Picture 1: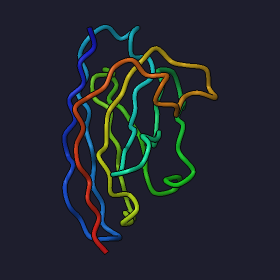
Picture 2: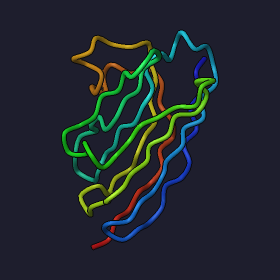
Picture 3: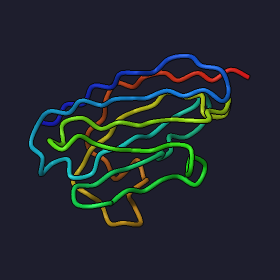
Length: 126
């Protein structure tokens, strides 16, 4: 059974930075893709950034490209989301998710992920 625990959320002014962490436990074969989704009030959950096992395999939402970076530790226990140049529209609950990797075109689809953390709030003020 995979378990995910997020940390690192908080409040920041526009232009600032935050780093989220997701600590994972459970078999690696069940979480070959791990990453981050977000959900703002009144909006659907959306994929933000995903990293897969293997070299240089990341996927990003267009809205965060160039500002956010997803990474992992070599032991594939912790996944990070470095968020720079934050904007008020980045305000949301951020969730860590994991699954066996879906096909490339579905990497940012929430429905493709089996395991979820409890979420951590990110608030960006203008």
